[in-house]
Image (cartoon, rainbow, N blue to C red; front, side, top):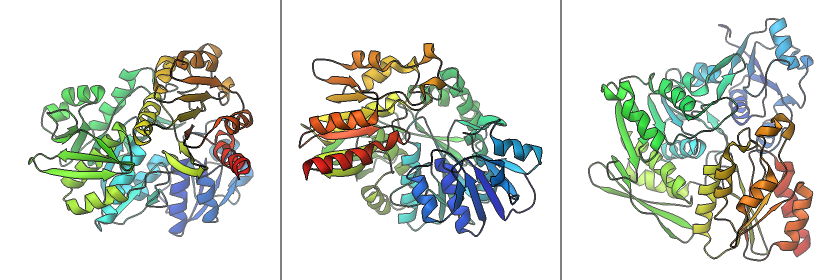
Length: 478
């Protein structure tokens, strides 16, 4: 960290979603930005290239010449990285991304922090879009590319700042959760489940870090919580700042005791219709192209935040209907000979389950394919083996690819794709383990039929699966 206002910042790990979007925003504000990373792929590579930001696709101490004023270190890099070692040796000032965000984005603004195991990006993006639709002065930082907003990051000098609050650790030199740095005035807790098992021992460990976060909400602030979620409900029931009335609590969900109550979901014309009963017993009726119970919670969180911030309901209804979602969250990539292809981030069994359940509701009677790459630190492990098998039950055909970088997980902890296929396979569905992407493409080209819906699910590049499939299907059908 440095007290000097830096003119040149270098990002180690610039292809991380948040790192890339922050780098682009700072570049647009006149800062000189350079960076480095490996495995640079869309949508971040597209964004960086469109802004002509200079970055290296390898880590090397030479990337720190000329010497930057400040080095921003992403949480995916660690000791042994040549740029980090050079930075420490030469005493070049450095900072974590969450600290940078606090310094450049959050100070002098009202911080609205969106947290939870699932739905953070979508909920934060929807809130920012509602604010924009209503003409509110707002900044935001979202760990992805919101389709309505373009870049996932925007500055404001004074106003609201909406940020996705990740519970993952900050950097190799700071093991606190990222969201501790975000100074929430309004804190949204959408759900809490066991995730990031590489750094959290168990669910109690995760709840502990959320408990710390709630402890720094000021008395002028507010906690908005999904009280349908068992772990969230337990947390808000026992936390001293809420029990002692130091911070206001507002709840949303389907249960009758919620302050903002979601009524039953309806589906029509590929849209989801929701009625939300407000504390004054009035009803706000919402239609959205997002689908599934998990998306209903995301929408309810955003609507609750908007109403409590005094935004006119007509802007809320308009914004939700026009919201296009996030890149890589049920992102439609192509329709070829009536075969519809989606891309989805797929970072956790619950997210997979809800995505597939929602897709089945939106596409009734269609044959649903799920093609899944075990890639995240959680998904490569066998800790969620049973839950992962159950997550695919709404799909008709399931393909499990080879594990990405399997050597990074001890063999006794590693997911067994063949065993997973055996758990999924049943009378009403067929599952396959196909190791390589090119083999998967060949199989799909021979099996897909008009009317099928396919969701490719990975939180990484998946060896360019979607582009390869679209190219091969186009060649085969036209």
